[in-house]
Length: 458
Ligand SMILES: Nc1nc2c(c(=O)[nH]1)N(C=O)[C@@H](CNc1ccc(C(=O)N[C@@H](CCC(=O)O)C(=O)O)cc1)CN2
Ligand SMILES: Nc1nc2c(ncn2[C@@H]2O[C@H](COP(=O)(O)OP(=O)(O)OP(=O)(O)O)[C@@H](O)[C@H]2O)c(=O)[nH]1
Ligand SMILES: [K+]
Ligand SMILES: [Mg+2]
Image 1 (cartoon, rainbow, N blue to C red):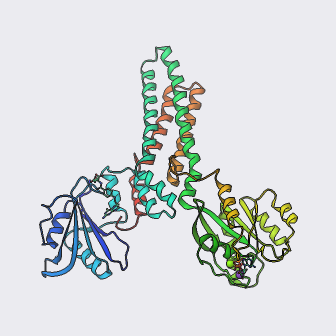
Image 2: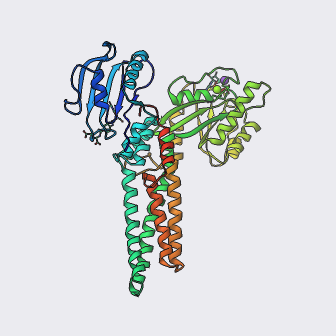
């Protein structure tokens, strides 16, 4: 178990009304008592907050006016004694409080170290700890509720139940290896192995199927707005974001760099990417922009391909369809308020079965239809993060894939009539791989690396 008492500023750096400096570890109360003479914090009830002054014990100088929260181990965030000092939110004030605590014997916490202690002290498992980070980083409501579910241990419980089923199978196999003389036991074991193994495998596969939606919940659908210059790409971003995020002018080549914005369309989280109009250009800045547009196009899950209805369909437009053909596309014919010079039949011939939506962004027409098309492209009905357990974390997905493979090998071995001790090796391996998701048997360096991605003070 960790011995050091650690401290960090747990609120964002910068000016704010209030900032919190947190201390965790055996020395927390002693340190706090040395700098908070108002009352003996070791004697107050746990989970209470106290008003008073912070005083530098060396100079007897008053440093701050504070509120101090006292939380006694083990029912705390880290399972250690915790003191939280709520001070005024200026940079100087918060830093003075932190310096004082450091001088009185605490060590500066590493990023994620409070949460790491919650993990090492057994309050949460690894997937729950990772969910804490997801929660902080979540950019959409759905991502946030998914992270909360995972923090509550929903994924952990599912993984534990799968591991339990595997352990029971291994126990059966064990009996069979110990008493090989009973033929009927062998037959039962085979049947049981196939049944249980298949059930677990199906559950792993179901979880993996949620990964695509999980990724979407977590990151939003990467949606690139692509088109020739001046067709209305930035106008489209602004309308979907309901905010003037991107610069719109009547000058072709206005957008030079990629502009990103998170938006919610019918409950579907989109990471909208406005790009520079794609054309051949001598302008070096614009050319870099065009390169970035092509890159955004490659990385996108969904392409909103914008055309100008006021102009004829050109071979440049057709080339964009060709470049985007590996992705989900929605074609948007914009500027329907102007005279229509585009030949719809020509567009349809190139677009194939891609949905085509007509809009006038200046008159805000066709937006509803576009939103419906977006929602329908990705989901049958609404995206639901309520009932399902989702996986979205790349580490979890990889481990699930490896588990599925190990289990497959076990099932194949049974089918091939391999000796049961060989089958047992693969099942045990599956059990271990699943365990890594919740932090069983994971290497210390992985733990360090995962927690170091947290922010300071978490
Ligand atoms: N001031 C403050 N606010 C905060 C946090 C914090 O550390 N400090 N949190 C930090 O992320 C979050 C709250 N998360 C927490 C999770 C568990 C426990 C905790 O003490 N758990 C005990 C049970 C306590 C009880 O039931 O009374 C336990 O599990 O044993 C505390 C905070 C968000 N808000
Ligand atoms: N009449 C009409 N004008 C529009 C419509 N949508 C956008 N515009 C105008 O078209 C011009 C270009 O719009 P932008 O949104 O900047 O177009 P863009 O595709 O982002 O342009 P670049 O970034 O330069 O490639 C602006 O003057 C807009 O006001 C529309 O539906 N109808
Ligand atoms: K423009
Ligand atoms: Mg633009």
